[in-house]
Image (tube, rainbow, N blue to C red; front, side, top):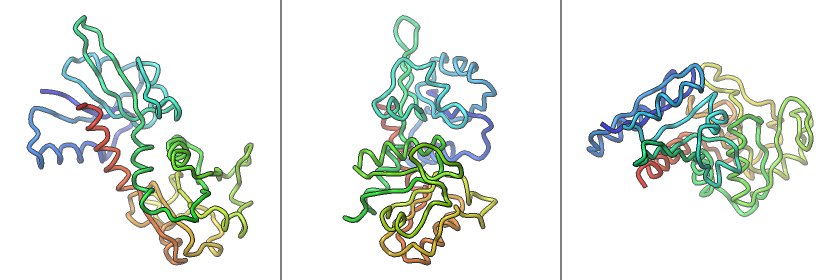
Amino acid sequence: MKKLGLIGYPLGHSFSKKYYLGKFEKENIQHIDYELYPIERIAEFPSIFMNKDFYGVNVTIPYKIEVMDYLNELSEEAKAIQAVNCIRITHLADGSTYLKGYNTDAYGFEASLKPLLKEHDKKALILGNGGAAKAVMYALDQLSIAYKLVSRTKQADNYTYDELDASILAEHTVIVNCSPVGTFPNITESPALPYEYINDKHLFYDLIYNPEETSFLKKGKEKGARIKNGYEMLLLQAEKNWEIWNS
């Protein structure tokens, strides 16, 4: 039985496990299993990948950066983003393993955003500066969309929420929420934007997919903005993982 899985800690509800097991059943893919591996320390990772049945893993919080110490190679986008969410494991004839890391979050975001873009979408605001924002920044670079980060504290070359005004929002028509604000169960919360300056020129993208329509997206929709949640990004990312593992 070939093995795939997800490492992280803690691991509760997993989109990945549900998705892949459903895929295996629907497409009659046999002799492959996908399981969750909640490891308390990244040092436990070798006990997983040394198993010769393993040929791929997904990586989630808090190990997307730490796991890179165990890899032999990084793909171009993983090198640029400095975070990995997908690893292909090759077991060599001499008994060693070769691990290559990828970042399919960037692919999923770019592929799901691109069809929504209009000619005037030249600049973006990225809400939050955590790990998810790095993949978004890489994807926006690929699309030649300039961006600014927005966070609660002032750092070099970013905006704080308090600094956002009508002129900044008129210039930056793509707004991407990479923060956890608005995630279930805190579904009434939304990033502290001056929503009165939003109009039908704007595109609101929320990486959150639970709830399906966050308070952030609802407020954008009320002002006529195009809206998109992160569910398709997850689907595209999952299929890209599958392609990598089986290439």
